[in-house]
Amino acid sequence: MTKQIVLTGITTTGTPHLGNYVGAIQPAIAASHDSNVQAFYFLADYHALIKCQDPAHVHLSSREIAATWLALGLDTENAVFYRQTDVPEITELTWVLSCVTAKGLMNRSHAYKAAVADNEEKGESDPDKGITMGLFNYPILMAADILMFNANRVPVGKDQIQHIEMARDIAGRFNHIYGKTFVLPEAVVGEDSAVLSGLDGRKMSKSYNNTIPIFLPEKKFRKLIMKIKTNSLEPGQPKQTEGCTLFSIYRAFATDSQVEDVRQLYADGIAWGEMKQLLFEHLNNHFMDARKRYDELIQQPDNIENILQQGADKARSYSIPLLKQVRQAVGIKALADTG
Image (tube, rainbow, N blue to C red; front, top):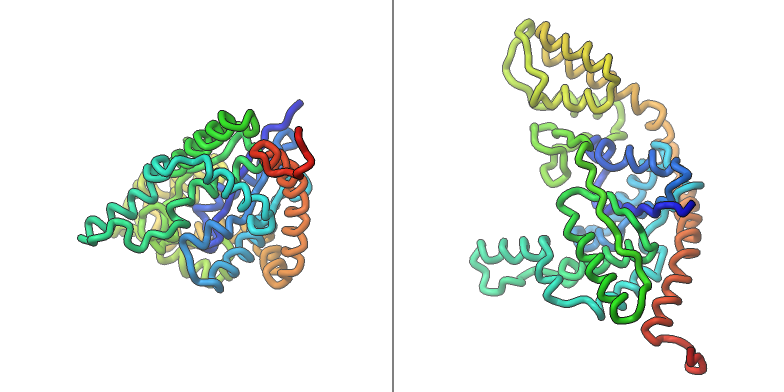
């Protein structure tokens, strides 16, 4: 039976938080243990340079993200876990793909159009002011990430569907010119995946600065949970679970019976401070063992580095032959080779 190839990238610009865990990390780690799936997970550090020009931040984020995935149980024997920059074939493929990609396709990128619209709203005379080629070409690098391993399925949020469609267009154009080389990837959108609210009630996102990092030290973890925004209902007054950030976070980490018990506490008028303490204790217990592993890993970056290098070796066992095929297809080969 042919394994499905699934690929996911994690941009190294932030510290993993509870929203990341529920929406992406937890299902990806579960897939890493599925013997019917060949999963590729990578630290997208080239992509990070588009958004962040703080070298220390990108470096620290790479360490934190790798340690987080490993601490939470990523199966690196079954899955391929690597750093994008350790697979040089990806950047070479990016150039080759850029040579078959229409500029008009890139002009339609949501990120580029949003940046242009922002300049126009500010009254800038140059609509491209401050827009880098990294931002403009971002979809081609993403296509190379995917096509390098001929991924069948790419789990993404709704805001990333366009990039998978672009990867399909680029792959189709290459195949049309040079012969069938690439699989056309499909976007997998988790319609039922939970979207957690953050400290202020909006979607938990580093863009809003409202996140709860997974592996904060215990005291800081509790302090953040105590800051979660609630309404002014007093203890003893019945409270609604719908639309409540505390309840939504609890539900994402609890069993059905635990959820029903807490639902009853809301009906009975649980005090907000009591609910925050209950949530803290539940989450703290949930992540206790993983936090210990994380703390050990974060203090031993050489161990993380070794795992990533092993992953890069696995990744390159796929990327080197594929790039050789691509070069052959476009006519870059030994001069004596007339085939």
